Length: 337
Image 1 (cartoon, rainbow, N blue to C red):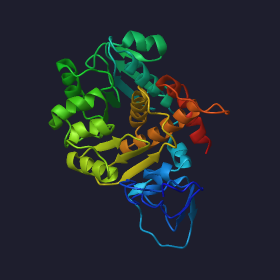
Image 2: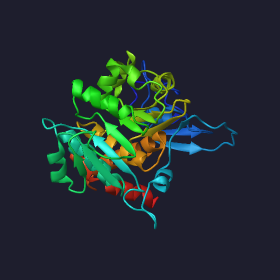
Image 3: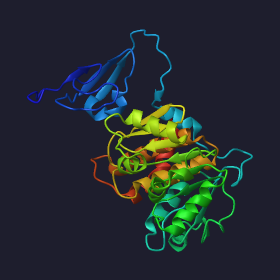
Image 4: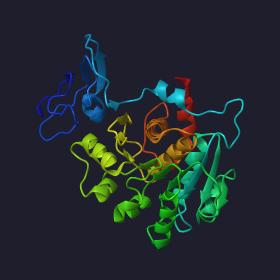
C-alpha cells in the first residue's frame, strides 16, 4: 500500500480502514474515489478523507433504518427557522448567552455574534464582557449577570467564562431552570468536576466537547470508536452530546447519532467552537430539538468555514472571526437547496 503512487479506486471501503469506525491501526488506502455498493457505510462519513469522492451505486438492497444519519443540505435548509407572517422577535426565539469575561471578551463576542446571525429572534447577553459585545452588536440586550438577564427560551453557557466559584454557581443556576441549555468549553470543565449537576437533567441538555474535553468528562478519549463513545456518554448521562471533529457526531440518549462531515478542517482554529455554540443555541431557542439544532448548526458552521477559506482561486487558513462573517452566507446557501 505504501508503495502505490497511482490513483486508487476503492470498492465499497478503502482497504485497511475500519468500515464501522473509520479507525486506522496499520497500513491503509487513501482512495481518490470510493464506489459504495447498496448503502453508504459509516466509514464514508467518519473517514471521508480516506475515501475521496464517494460514488453510490444502488443494487436494490432492502435496508433497515439507520441509527447513524447524515442530513442532506436540503434537509437542513428546509428546517432552518425564518420569520413567518405572524412572527415577532419573541416568537422566533430568545437565546441567552453566558460567555466571555472582561479579561477575555472574545468568546462572548464570537458566541453572541453567531447567535445574532443564526436567527431573526432576540439575543440576550449576560456577563462581564457586555461592553465588548455591545460595541460589535448593538442589537443585543445585555445584562451584568444571569440573574439580571431576563427571560430566554434557551441558554448557552461556558465559552470563556472561567472555572472559578462564581462561574460554577452561574452554571448551577442555569442548569436549575427548565429551559434547554448548551454547555461548552469552561462549562464542561466545571461539569467534569461535578457531573451530578447535569446527569439526568429533565430539561433538554446539550454538551459540546472536543476530544480532550470528552476525556475529562469520561476519563478516556473517544477514539478509536467515536460513535460508540459518544453514544455511551449520551445514554449514561441522559443528555445530548456533540463530539467535535472533522466528522462531528451528535448523539441522543436513545442512541440515534447524526454525523456531519465538514468537508475539510478549516474550522480547526481558536474560537470556532464559540461560534458553533452560538449558532446551535439560537436554533434551540427557536424550538428545535437539541439533536436537530446541533446537526443544523454543525452543517452551517462547517459550510461557513469552507466559504471563509475559499475565494474562488484557492484556499487559505481562516480565523473564527472569518467563519462568523460567513454564517449568513452559509445559511443562505443551505436554504437555496
